[in-house]
Length: 446
Image (cartoon, rainbow, N blue to C red; front, side):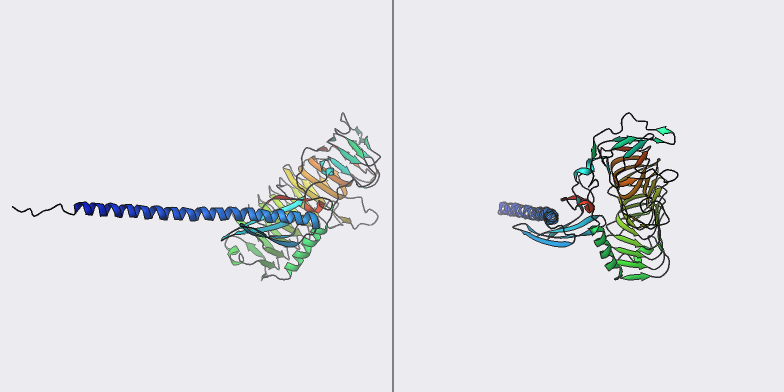
């Protein structure tokens, strides 16, 4: 009897199915490997682009060391890797470097601040310039670190019946010199920055006529504008949210208020013709505020940017500076005896730079242009071309033309009363305004 069912060809079918499975698996492996090769290539290109951007920063530093010009652009080609494009321009007391690395289809941009490698005087606790008055210490004053003073030296003194109460005048070396007792300071960078800002102010992309309350909703109407001119007041009230001013410029004709736990960051600039108030636990990082009148930080405000002021800057009520914060007073002293005044229980960190002129005749150098009160603590650099009053705690370096208390009935010049100065901060980089006789260095990425 003939069989109706035969196994002939079943082996061939099994072989064909197996071949199909192996082919599919092979194709999957090839596709998987190709995908990961592309990912690896992208990672390699991204890494190369990053190092090319770093090369652009290094090229900018080398150019600065050799040429000492503050605004320029550079391009460079690195064989088999790609190229970099770097731009350097003044940014307050520092220089801003924007370096882009390009490798194949990948790009990486680095934004960083450039400063100066500090000269040796920044290792002293105190550098005292001005006239040949002795440095007189009274009360609970203590200086730990080296001091550079005039040939008149350092003396103990009696102030309001209290003599100097320390065991030693200075816990360090007392150095004396007739000349060059302050670090080299050059305001060219700040002036160029202000000129650049002035040029931008004439090309505003948008104008707002009335008082503007910038909150989360209203920000959407101006967030795409590179520059905005507010013809009245500006109030920033974004309640715990973040406003990024990356590369943006705001010109405020009236007053500026930053309140209600607002957060502002980025490397933008806000120029204010009126007064500036920063309060209510607000946090400001990296931006520059140019103030043509007074600036007040209070109510636990935290500021980690730069302030360039023509009049008074006051930090009180638990407000403080942080990070690489810089406060610069470059105006003329008229009705106020203090251009920078710190009266806060919180520790401020950064740089205070006071370069002022007095408009009161007959008393050109008799003003406390910088005042660190007895309740305050500061960590960082203080540089003042005028008179300082320091009765608080300073951890860092103080360079001032002279100290001043008051002039009636007795003139107390170069007197320190109840101050505590300790030089234990080692500076790797200082603001670029101190780079006249120094090389440059990278501060950090933005």
